[in-house]
Length: 139
Image (cartoon, rainbow, N blue to C red):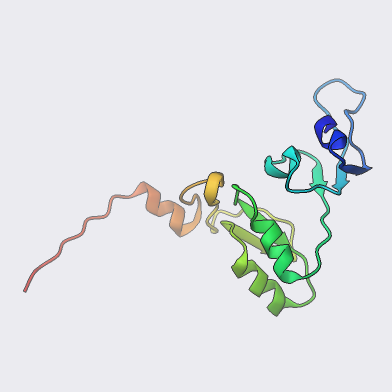
């Protein structure tokens, strides 16, 4: 966070450890993060979110895909056709539309790029635990 602020990030909310025992950090919202900043390139875990301003749908997709990670994405939209189109353009293993992201035993879970290889859970995940035999008969 200190590096991000030094590079020009704006902290809209939070941005500090909470004064209690343990490793507690205040929910944090950032803006003015650019691709040149270290915080843009690192995978953020914890209660930190970044708000970006873009000019159009294509710019939003380009920004979202400009990462070496690709676990999941969330789209909030009243235009379901547009949300589906954007979901197909995102380079992620999972996309949630108009819901809080989560997993379920019947759904495959996994990412692409540096966020994983293969899938867990669901039918796709079960295939990881079986050996398939191919028998090919020539004419």
